[in-house]
Length: 275
Image (cartoon, rainbow, N blue to C red; front, top):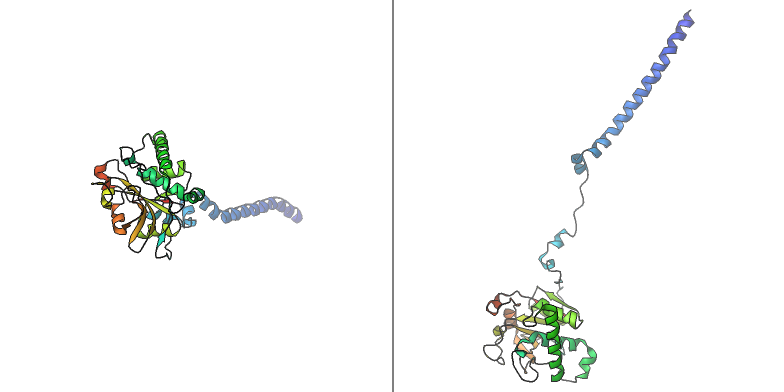
C-alpha cells in the first residue's frame, strides 16, 4: 500500500515538476532578451544609444570661398616679381572706324585675343610682335556677334558670365568666372600661366587714349604684372598692346555689367580666368 501511494503521487508530480521547469526557463529567457527588444522598439532609446558621427565636410559647405562653384580656392604661392605673357593683340576697331558696332566689341576682341594666345599654331604665324591681321579681326568680330545674337538674343554689353560662354562655347577654351578678385588672385592666375579678363567701368580707368568721356563698360585682357602695374592688351585703343595701368586703378574699376550704364559702378567684382 505504501508503494502504491508513492507511485500515484509521483505519477502526478512529475508533469507538474516538468511544467514548472519549462515555465521557469521561459521566464528567464524572456527577461534576458527584454533590454535589447525595448531599445529597438523605442525611438528615444535608439537615438540615445546611437548618434551619427560629425560630417567632416559640413564646415567646407558653409565656407564663403565655396559658395560660387566657379570660384576655386587659389593657394598662395611664391610668385615671380613680374610676369608678361605674350598675347596677340588687336584693336576692336581694326580699320580705325569707331562706329556704333565697333564701339561695342571690346568683349569680342578680348575673347579673340585669348583664342589666338591659346592656339600656339596661330600665335606663331603672327610673328613678333604678335598682331592679329585687321581683316581677320573684322571677320571674327562679326561672326562672334552673330553667334551671340543667336545664343543670347543680343550681342552688345555681355556680362562676365556671357563673355566666358563665348570663350568656352564659341572658341572651345577653358574659362571660369571667379568672384574672389584681388591683386593676389589676379597675379597668382597670371603666374600659373593663365590669362585674366576683367569687366570694368571703363571711365574709371582714365586712359589717355579713350575718346572722352570713355566707355561706360569695357573689357580688359590682363597679360602680366610688374611691381606697380598690370600689363594689359587693351582693345579699346590702337596703343593698347602691353599698355600698363596702375594696379589700384584697375582694381577700383572692376565692375560687371548691371544692364545700365548709370549703375555700372555697382556691378559685382569678378574676373574671367582663361586656362
